[in-house]
Image 1 (spheres, rainbow, N blue to C red):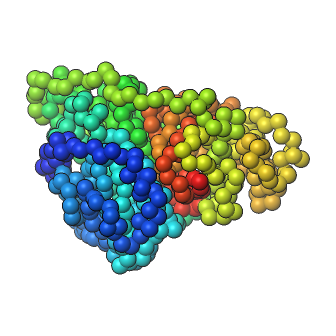
Image 2: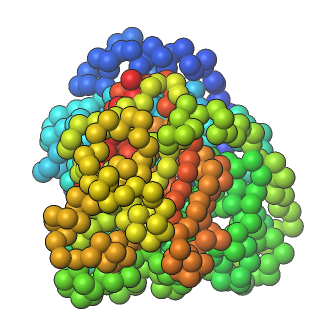
Image 3: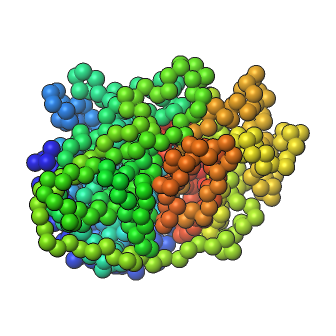
Length: 576
Ligand code: C2O
Ligand code: CU
Ligand code: CU
């Protein structure tokens, strides 16, 4: 594995260094607005008036790759070809089923012509990018074999590490599982000035879990359990390869970590007990480095880590692993029917190694950790449009379905609070509606009131909404099961992802009865910086502030447990 990884990494990093030289920032806002009005774009034909700095052809197809010893594995894989632009845009991860890393600069205009040779429809989404709705890879834009979807957008994001992955409704989980995913790195001048480790010293780590059968073929069993809990594989793959040792020099490295798993949540920590030094999250660099005893990383989340091996002697081995934790899976999942809590040989929450670093080269100098990384505004409550009326994202968990705001994806149209004016800053509150109502007695709504139809929600706040939805369920579908049982039994962790611009988490509160398991994760829950995916623990209430700038149209929000997403735990905002 070392031999295979090293040349790849070297190429990857030479390219990144080059990329920073050719930096040219176009005046971005004006042209972005132009793009949002040209609704014709993002169709089947390139827009002739859009002049791309970077143009790619992206293809999804079936391939056989060698992952384990023995027979090759059939996968689905993104491949790309550069049509226009600097060659550092694309970097292959050799031997991986993952798509090439796409490396862009802020301000670049990008055209991507996407087509596929799969037997079922698909569409590609740029997770983390702030692009017009028509360019976002909405499920309704899914194309069939042989068709082409043309994306044209300008890179408005600050520097960060993002994901491109499929988003067809009902088939995202299986397509990602079979291999469709890739990393997308954006650079900007603010980041370039810091001189962070680059070249050989910047290492992407995409974490995924997979199960293989005796013939080395991927197994994606999705029985009722796996749909309700999310799929957990038997084995961890890093960059699409079985974990192994990465040879490093005794100096500082930049690790760009992505949780690309369908449902597995990691509690990342170092084997020697040293702190994890976090320099960035989903939406880019933090203001200053932060030290954590461990970091929770849920599907869809990214982490920028400063790993300092300076002063380590030759032969030192350090492992980044997942530490034990509790509370992310339902406590009483056994009553769901099958009796087993997930089928993985590597249970979520157990302890296991992920990737090992071995110091094989002595180096006398190393870059030092910058004290300040980035400057950005902190969103404040007095700036939001809806201070007293947060947009609810009510997580509803029942033995039959996982839902957001009481409705499965595609049903019921936009609820009033799902219509958001463009160029506004909004307060959003994510909570478990069972937990909120049952365990904490927070609601002052009487059962009678709660059973009223949640009509005219505009001015009523979220609690009525959550209560109404829940009680209807309790009274009908859940039948004889107590509401308390219903809530307690199914409460689990959900990584909630919002498309469009990144948000800032402003508070987390945990409900009574959840403190014990919460204690095993709480010191590693990410709340700093710009996020697009936030892990919401059982009983937890998370408040965040999100801008909805520049682009009108439909933007999704959903659970990034991909089995949940496919099950319908997804809704949309209409930005108008
Ligand atoms: Cu990473 Cu809507 O997706
Ligand atoms: Cu996304
Ligand atoms: Cu979920």
